[in-house]
Length: 621
Image 1 (spheres, helix red, strand yellow):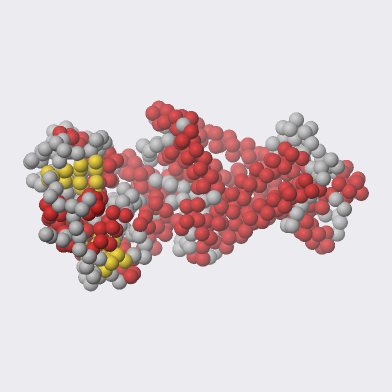
Image 2: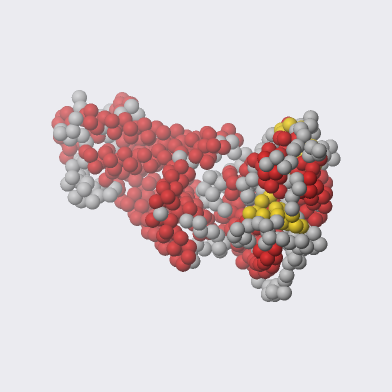
């Protein structure tokens, strides 16, 4: 018997059909209207706090087909499918995508089903936007619509509902056994987080129950029809379905009302963050404009807790990026400043964040808000002019940390000479700091003065290529110096090029090495392959337990302003354990700060810089 025949046999049921409206839709309507209004006000506030140039960049990106396509792709992959989480933790990725993508599919299918099958006077003419949400209550299969035509949608809707419920089940399981989904730590939810969370958990089970109560009349498939049969077996034909539709609507309304005050606001703000990021907009204030979009796009998933190297000690969990973002939302200035100062600025939280929230940049802006207040006059600054500066030459800039580890400078110069490189040593007889440490401390004005003095010296030298041995210098030269027409390279990139050009020949030995990715070189500048090619050409390259963008900070970072020496020692010990997982003969790094930090802590396994390794392996004619 088809649903239409059941309706013919049950006229008393038809009498209870309330057309295109029922009172139970009110909680949902109130919740969704409140949420949309809140989102609209927030959107206006974010856009108003952007600079005019940033707003212009955003507008241009929205009408640029290439950028627009990237926006659509990123929203689909990051907000719905959660591919970034899938790549690292598949089960966790499935959980997120099941809820997000499944809900999206149900919304699309529901509207399509209504557009195809609902009588026009009930939906389109009356403009009842809530109608597709409660379609199974408001409409039954009409005589002109065959069961076959509707059965495909019944099946797809049940399939999507099952998909979502599987994700909800994993989410509930994660709250109690997060390690099985690849997470050692999870965030502690606030009161509003709990309200939104429990509402979210309840929405789809209640939808299943509500649709199951009316499935024999409103249509159903492999999930709702058997549930309906079971309910009728247990309770008979007099099913009181209305309370379940009320419960479903109340749960939806409660979720949308609590959404702006909870971590789940990221569902609505992630797309905005993607649009702003793809437009090239950067953090300029710790709480306004782009930063506000980032703050509300943070999902508090907790992946940054496990990522943070400080959390090798449980007491430092409270300094993780997720809690920093949370306190920014609450305007807790005391805790904000304390957490901002602790950060190592290693960038691992950003590398692993599925949303791409640049917490390190926000922390630097927060530091600048209270550190960049004293008057400085750096106008007399002038970087010493290097001797022998000739247009077209390669310039080598060692930097402060390399001068504190002169063995690196010695090795770099030896490699250059063996390759017959015509170069000039920019800071051989003294020079200015690159400015990166000042930026990390929030001393923006002082940093800009130093940068301008160095920039003028480099441009006036006429060099065409700038080679650096310090990743800290490399990052600031690439991002802040604006050296148009001058190629900026790390020495590992340049030495790799020399080998590829045949200007250097390296002999391969029998030793085994593990390479440590310095934070500023790897996550900061995206340089991973060139150092590994160099190490692999002189010996056996073994893997660390975590490497690439998951590499563990050495602990010696200049980024933290207040982290204690004992805390740093713990981080260094954890990083060494990670590097020695496959028992290499030597540890190789490409950063003077990492070299010094590991050398002081490693008593059993020698630590060398790549420049030293290359210099010792050159085949000399």
